[in-house]
Amino acid sequence: MRKPPSRKGTNQMSENFEKALASRVAGGYPQPLFDAMRYSLFNGGKRLRPRLLLSACADLGGDENEAMPFACAMEMIHTYSLIHDDLPAMDNDDFRRGQPTCHKKFGEAVAILAGDGLLNLAFETMAEACENSSVEAAGRRFAAAGIIAKAAGARGMVGGQAADIDSDAARADGAVLTFIHEKKTAALFSAALAAGSALAGAAGEKRAAMAEAGKCLGLAFQIKDDICDAAAEKDAGKASYAVFYGLEKAEEDYMRHSQEAIRLIARECPPDGALHSLAVSMSGL
Ligand code: GRG
Image 1 (cartoon, protein in one colour):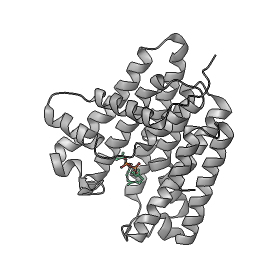
Image 2 (cartoon, rainbow, N blue to C red):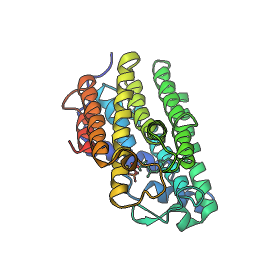
Image 3 (cartoon, protein in one colour):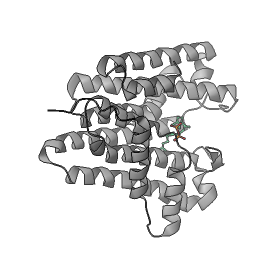
């Protein structure tokens, strides 16, 4: 029988997560490669995707220890995507989270390899969790690994990034924008809730509803990002929701996706659970 939902404090959950993540990238040779991986993993990320995964798993009665390797894998994949997104061949950014980007600090070659190293470490971490599993838990863990792999790959985040690079403000239409948002950003949010649910033993309609809630959170998150970029005039020449639809509709759609995410989470999870409060705080509702 599955455990009742955990009421562990979110601070304790975050502390356990930071320890688990640090232990996965301790030491290592050549040192500049591992220093670059650690630099980008530990410079102030909000940890939204692992928090979503751990909260979904806890609220649906799963075990935090079982979910932890998958939460670490999500943050490794997210971090690799940011390192590569900042490279000169992509967004060419000098700063992230107010500090020099990985390639500005360590050089382009090391930054590319740090991203590659993190992506592969994510899969190594999930594979290890599958291998070191009881027969009973193996199905849940393989399901979570598959969900995360698909969301990160060419039919998910990588595909969305490719479409984004190929887009420009003049040619972008609503369908292209939706594709980019769903794949580039919402795929990982959706995977976080679906994988967390799978690790708690949820399947079928319940897991699909959680995946949908994650997708809505991701869409809201990306629309907000576009609204902020428009306000800061950082969207010149790029396909942007706020530019294409205008600020009023962008705000409306932001609210609509946020409310739908919270409605689904309230339906599938305990109302006083960690996921509900995280979704409410992310949405500012
Ligand atoms: C390079 C394969 C590849 C993919 C890149 C994530 C991504 C795809 C691009 C980042 C571009 C961007 C700024 C998109 C807006 C949404 C987003 C992912 C913001 C960053 O996520 P946060 O706010 O990051 O969760 P922190 O800094 O908290 O970790």
